Image (tube, rainbow, N blue to C red; front, side, top):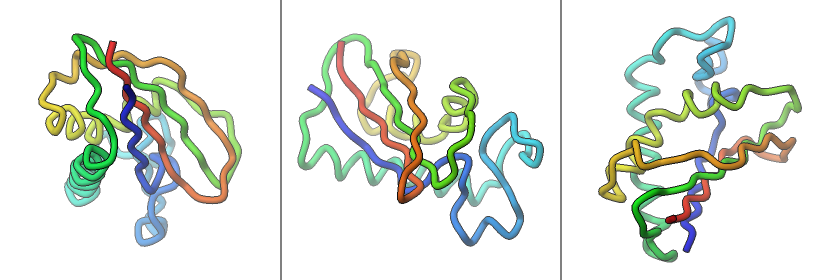
Length: 130
């Protein structure tokens, strides 16, 4: 069983209203802050929470002791990206998903992490129980 959650942005391409400040959630970005501002962090947590609840209405809940997460990051710009940077930038979303699933996020392990050029900026998380 897998649960698919699609965040409507990436950590690299922040929403249009934030682009004026050129902020990034990527921890290795030259223009990134150590921690993003509270407003953006809270938005990511809230989005992940509600998108997980919505996904659970139409998909089966993953079960097991461990959870494997496969990530596909689609961006309008194709660049070489950093796997561990992407995972670190999704920290608040992953914390929120773990809370909704009522699991400890230490039970997450990361499988494939892919970067694709897409028509929209989005991050797809596929969570499978092991």
